[in-house]
Image (cartoon, rainbow, N blue to C red; front, side, top):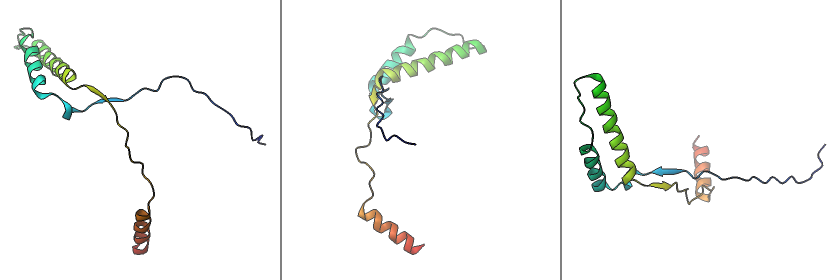
Length: 101
């Protein structure tokens, strides 16, 4: 049987804030310049064998990632400002669909 008493929970801790990178906000000119500088400073790799080619691919990949992260800052995820609510317009549309069905 129920006693109908309130139970209060207190949760302590932090909630992780989701962060994203929006590629549309990337500073393209600075990205290109940073990537060019990183690739110019790269090691001289002999790409005649598979190991050298793998190292070159890894170096280019890291240069791209670093240049992107440097020029596209992390931002907080914005939650939608409008909540979905049942409106009179939706109600009339629902009635119309039911009638047609």
